[in-house]
Image (tube, rainbow, N blue to C red; front, side):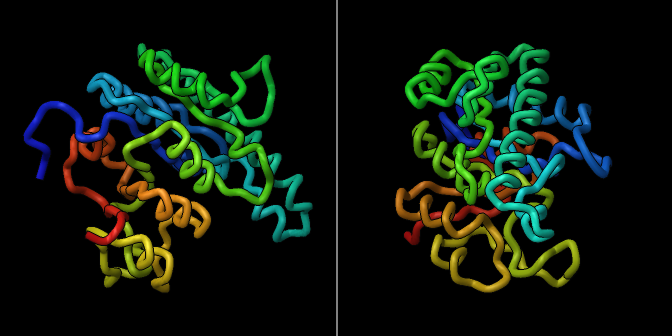
Length: 245
């Protein structure tokens, strides 16, 4: 049921996007129509007065883990993946600003000609001034996923919730794309998400970080237009991962 008030339920959010979300119907790279669509959805919650931080993966360009499984050095592969997230972040920043939303890309790897360095106090200042911040290059360290980056940055910017946008409408006990009998969960507690077989929310490091700091996670379908605003207004869509009552 939608929130009764016109004001948003969440005043500050961290939106986690996969790199694959930017593919659209392409096999590789960036579909700029999809990027503009995401930017328009972000603009709708920005206009509500919600502060927005965004973390994007790089899997549409390069995946360090996949390269590692084929004999690539893991650390080098992860750094290459971080650079892919910078490309995606710049694309989204451009689409946001083209739509009239002030945005800044901040990167955990220093590259001053390209983007601002991630500095927590500066990021908070951007949010206070109504700018969307797009947080690139992961944590700046190999062996950490962008899920973990999203959880860490959400806590650092004092977000009310971590929004994980996916290709399906929540969390299921098995893959709903291959199993029509898959069961959808409306709500899970952190331990269920960590321990139940078949449940895939985020990697365990990210989930544990959220659990230890009581940061709720909402997993929802990005592909349905307007869903980001519905979540921020408090409509009960997707799956909520939180502590037990």
